[in-house]
Length: 402
Ligand SMILES: [Zn+2]
Image (cartoon, rainbow, N blue to C red):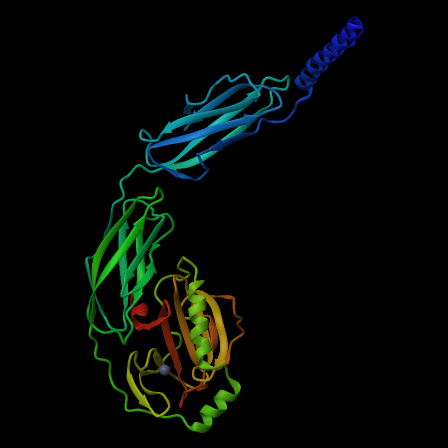
């Protein structure tokens, strides 16, 4: 009985051994795929300081013969050079203290022991940052008139992950002045109805390896005496007629606020802003105090520019058209987004040029013709410049290059 069983068992074992050896031999001759490598703890384009603890894992159908590991084209010792097995799971340390600030490359060439000597390359580009974070305001005291723009500058010793500024209960983003730069700027609107006083500016800075720093400066909001207008009025009939054919004025403010949040994190503009028409005269300056029967007392938060009826109005700067609509008060209105939350508004147009919402527009390209649609009693362009939704004096932006 026993003899009857042992023979087939030996036979089965032999078959298994022959099969196993046979499939290895078969694999040795036929395997043609590059080994796949995964590395945990060291990400491509990641930022690192101190010692990196990482793990290399390989699961290959045929055993791995060699791994040639190079850090910045020099031999790297942390990874076994001749593992000789199919499955590899090896933790290694990479001390970045000896490495310079900036980009580094770990390059692996993995070759298996099959007849084809299949090999695969694996490359990780990573950044090393062991620099202590250092950042300062370019000025410690910013004096800014009511209705003007505070242009804050922060200088760091390296490009940052985030930089935000808190002032007057608002938070603003800082932007690199050009890609890859470690100089940052922030535009803060000082509304013309703000109360003159002194404020703390607090910048919260974070670098790419998570180091943070808080720095402070001072913002002094300075009184500015805006001129008073004698007053004017628009007939009730005209206003009623405008309301009939227009969107409610509130919609414009809401739309601008919505768009400002989506404003690109880069300047679409170049050089100074230009006056958006050939103006014979400026009929109302920025911030003029008005009292009208329809709106009561308010400050005029734009510039009124006048020339012949239907003179061409053009874009003050490069940007993207975000609104083209008729509103009860501002009449036919175009709004352009210039990036970094800066927008310009062109109101009371007689008609629109051949432009569409969403299209890019160049500085000097036509937007429409001067009109008196909406709350206007004469042909003029009402031009506004908004910083994060707050109107500021546009002439500062035509004088300076931001
Ligand atoms: Zn106006």
